[in-house]
Image (tube, rainbow, N blue to C red; front, side, top):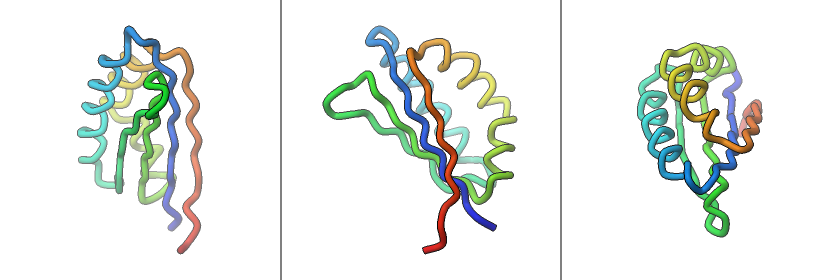
Length: 98
């Protein structure tokens, strides 16, 4: 089974920056407890703090799809984080065998 790597790129207005990061930390903690999660890491751009990236890895596409059905995804991402963003791009990538 092929793993899935997701790359979420967010642009956050300055007034929402700290709130979005707090919510992402909460999301990361919840997501890391999911059985199919391998990693969930959050990064801030060193030159432009409005740009935040999180790298998410799951054991399969199916596990990632289940992640998107969780209550924490719906309440945190869709309910709280997305409304605070000025831009959101999510890429889903199959992980090539090493």
